[in-house]
Image (cartoon, rainbow, N blue to C red):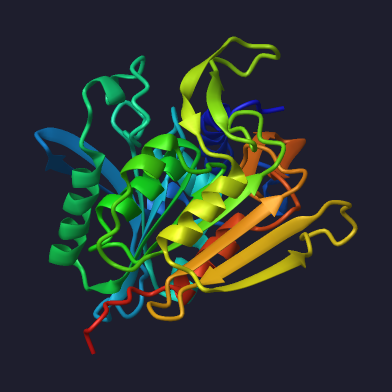
Length: 339
């Protein structure tokens, strides 16, 4: 079983490329049972120069109505991953035609994001890569080349990508309408440095049994491999899940709240999923947090492939991709004082 999202992404990346090649050649007898998806080959790849470095990203454009302004959604991989793996894992592109949005899968410098934790064994942190500028440059690229709805620019990420999504919300609130973190609470860096200049909305999905990001907060320890009892190295410090919710509740100045237990995809499953929703009635900023009591360090319901007898969805808790997209639809940019 996968121990980290990095191993999952690498396995998905290698294995799915092989299986979908076999499917295209009609020589794979079990391929018909695999769910339909939009392959990597249908995505465009581009490179831009940002802060003096060449950066790469993949993206998908809906085929219809290309003259209408479209939401722009960024999907961020975890540490050690890449954009192509997130196409397979999240399956967010599968919704792009129906819901008419542009989806972007960038790859971090040396396969990591500089989310502010300052983990000095990673070159991304050593060089203090300006990833916030990278996203500003990508947004400019899309605005110059396509019809982007500036009120609907969103970002979601997992683990290292989830921490990065929060940094973008903090440091580029002039551009982003909302952000979502999967398998990541808030880092101490975010708690101490976040300075939102424009109303935004924030969402979380977190597994209480996460064995990398501690539910109760404290030091993060990252396994160096997928082997049982693998060595773990320090990965910065994070707030507890509840302190994270409180942090954003205060930061967004929420004055309305709702609490509910929601059903898993498999109604037979024995385990609570607690959903907390908070609103700022003045700005319409929204905070939405899902706690999966028995969840781990994964993208819930993400798609994986190990071999012809072992492929499918990671969990039957909740469909993270569907929840994230619904959240983005509910959270356009609110500009106070602008009609």
